[in-house]
Structures are given as structure tokens and as C-alpha cells.
Length: 108
Image (cartoon, rainbow, N blue to C red; front, side, top):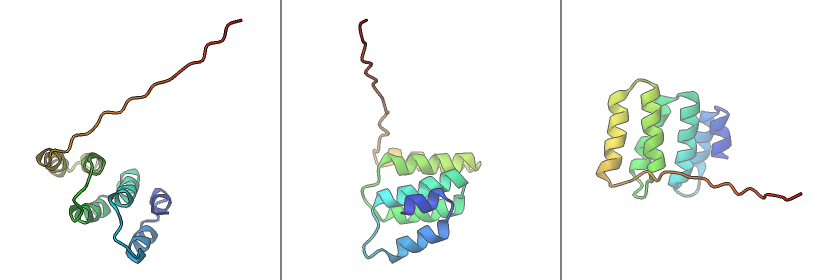
């Protein structure tokens, strides 16, 4: 639900939903909100998300890469660099993606 709200730009509703959760939101939930921040270039909210993810030990590369990209797009080069350096300091490596396509050939 947080993902849908943030993709629609309804950040206040998404934040309200996060606050009302009976348990602490996991990193994935914060990441979906961060993705909405990227779409709408909401740097202020991205800063808030960053502070929430600091409390979580198991933050993967996705959060740091998103933060770096958000800051870079906003021209905040020092913050973008800091996100990448923090990732490096914590020995977090971005795993490169790859895809395979299988084509079924038919004989006529």
C-alpha cells in the first residue's frame, strides 16, 4: 500500500500509514517510499527516510543507490557521494543485474 501511495505522490498518506503500523516497518517498505521520492524528486522526504533506515542494521545496496541517485538528480553532489561512501564503508556491494531470454524455435 505504501508503494502505491508513494508512486501516486500521496506521501502524507503513505507516511501516516507507516506511523500507524503496529510493528516497525522493514527496510523494503522504506525503500518503496524512497522510490516514490525518486519519481517525484522529493529530497526532503528522502532525507527523512534515510534517518529511518539508519536505525536498521540490514540495509541493502538498493536504499543507498536510490539515495545517491535522488541526491545527484537534485544537484546535491556531496550527499550523493556520502551515500556511496557509506555503502563502501559498510562493505555493501551493488549486485549487477542480468537477464536471460529463452527463445523457443519452431521448425516448419
